[in-house]
Image 1 (cartoon, one colour):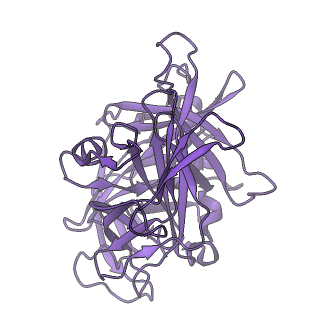
Image 2 (tube, one colour):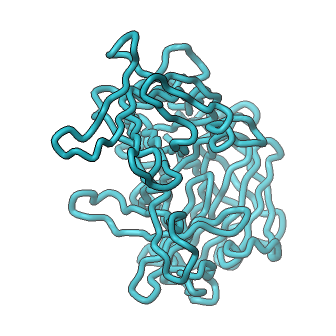
Amino acid sequence: MVSRVNDAKMSSPGVIYTTYLSGQGRAPGSQSAQLKRLTYTPLDFDNPVETVLNPAVLVQLDGYTHNTITLANAQTLPGNDSRLYDTFTLSIQKILQDTGDPSNPYVEFGNPNDPNAPILEEPFPLHLRSFNGRQSIVQIFLDDAMVHHDGVSLSFDQALFELANIDPTDGVIKGFLSDYLRFDLTSMPAGQRPNLISPEGMGATADAVYFSGDSIAMSADVGGDRVFEVLTPLGHIAGQWRLPTPLTPDFGTYTLLEVDPRILPVPNAQRIVSLQGIWRNYSDMILDLGTVEMFALPNSDDSDDQDAVMIQRDGSGAISAMYFGFVNYGTGQFSMFPIDQVDDGAAGNELTGTVSGFLDAGGGSVAGANPTKIRSGTFTFSGGAPAGFPASGRFLVFRK
């Protein structure tokens, strides 16, 4: 048998989470935006994809809050390819102003022409991709400087909203894959594993690494805290991770935190949630694993370049050696580095090779470099392979 993606866990439509991060600082007469409808428009057709029967969410515009609306039926295209969404519509149903009176807590300001219609609907350019069986997220910053009702009419500062939410390089709101594959490293020697880099991590040896295709993370137990770090080009974002629970046995969770901006930056300052997501053990998502495996992970561009990992497993199935890097279907090449270099991005000890023999989901040959169709292929080291690894073998793409 050869390794394969767990179809039972990857056949469901993708899930898109939209997280609203609000606030500039609380003040009397606080206003909240009621968000009821969530709309994304795919690039490949005009009909928007919307939430159905979701409860309304109140986002306090002048308070630092974290609210999430879920779109749980982000269908992909026939053939299980990914789907790109190019328009996000900011839809605010009404504005509610706190009165301070418990018996009548809010004054509501709705659409004066149609009480059932949103008071604000504005489309914005978006780059968000969904994959079957995966989770993606869009972060939206919204505060009372952008949206405010003076009791007569609504004002919306579109330029300020775009400044906070539009990527200045690409000119779009950018979504990303937020679910990770987790690789347990505790059977590897400490010297062959990366070290956490955040103050919370205190340089501890990583117990696990995580790959989504868009980003890489690490975690460890540090002084009784389960520290989680997402690596970024500028450093890291720290948070916490949690094990699966009886209510969520198929996945664990992580939470990224930031210092509460209402509090002066002092040691041990209170932190607030900036993002939440899930992780799943790679061995639950990929079945019939062998002694040596190489996996490629699609990204939100669904491009020729993909992150890749290569593992060696002992007789019990524990990871005894691990490499990370990338494949490029266009050039037909791959590069790998020891996993202990993931924390500092060191470029030494590079191993290179070629990828070829691309196959689709049905086992047929894929003509040319077509990343949306490739499900597996062959890797071949150009020089010597690492100890215990074959000179060539099969790689699997983590997608339905």
